[in-house]
Length: 433
Ligand code: UGA
Image 1 (cartoon, rainbow, N blue to C red):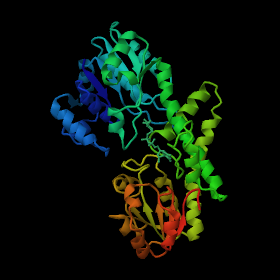
Image 2: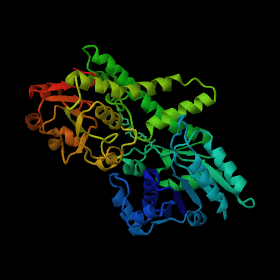
Image 3: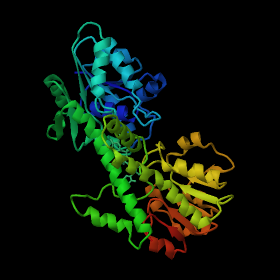
């Protein structure tokens, strides 16, 4: 059975290449012809470790191909994975016009039974809408099924997450659709959980919101640690040793960013409230997250007092390491605020500088540097915003000599406070002394 993957964003690209790696015949499609041209030549438009290699390999094997002709791809396929974007609207709801557009294209090109699989993160009940739209616009009564197969990919390890999944959720309402999806994921039969479609849709939003909640929880505890003698790193370790809690996602810092958690927690809040459920718990988590950059900037001000004309090195722009993605990154709010205060910034990130230049073009106040040492040159303070491994390996003695004033405000607790202070730095971490 041929598979079409509609949308070549990071979910669609990884899905297309990953399914081809499993041995299926996959055709990826997107209405953006320039992007398709690039990808067809094995060039990934996004930075994602391992993705370009996998693309090249599966293109060469003949299992994977791409076309900008969305209609033809649909006609050719028996299973269609929908991987288009679901950005949020002003009220925090997922904006579903791209999904609706794809559903209409599928209806127009329904030339035989097809399974339409939602892979993008969508509100619960979306599949009912997809079903209705296809039913309304198709000619005749060609059969089709809808299904939900949410993705759990993390940026930075998306390829590995796809090729070695913890679980595969398959939400279906017919045996025919279940059999098609179970066959696609044959290799991982014992990791497949088959549910209803509503359940599958909710599992995705509920998982992301829970992880976001965990992060906001530890950040609230970090605030408490900041005002006491407790150390949040040790509190997290002590909590995480309880297997019921677990050690992951208890890293205090600048909070969660990216294209998923902030959007998903707001979307789930809206879904619940629209259905009359009190979603206050998630609202609070979002509020705690929003407060993180303010707290961080207070520390910068506490260290420097007046920011006007101060030279400030900013290390890290991406919303997390190993990606060039800056969507909802705390760095954006931090830079905006520092620029407003009149500081002169010396910025460095291993991958995300080009993206950031689109928001903050180089100027008298915003200089992009070639490396962390260049950023530290003559700086009055150095801020750590993203925890790239490269920064952990910095020669801090050299940094100390380059800087005008030895001040580090560390939003990610990258360094050992005793060692850093031993080198003569004033050091401001998160939730620890
Ligand atoms: C997240 C989920 O982890 C994936 O399972 C999901 O598929 C994806 O969203 C999605 O919905 O598409 P991702 O946004 O790539 O993946 O990144 P995470 O590694 O989950 O990190 C999210 C944010 O939380 C980052 O800003 C990170 O810095 C922050 N974080 C994470 C913390 O502040 N503390 C932690 O302990 C962990």
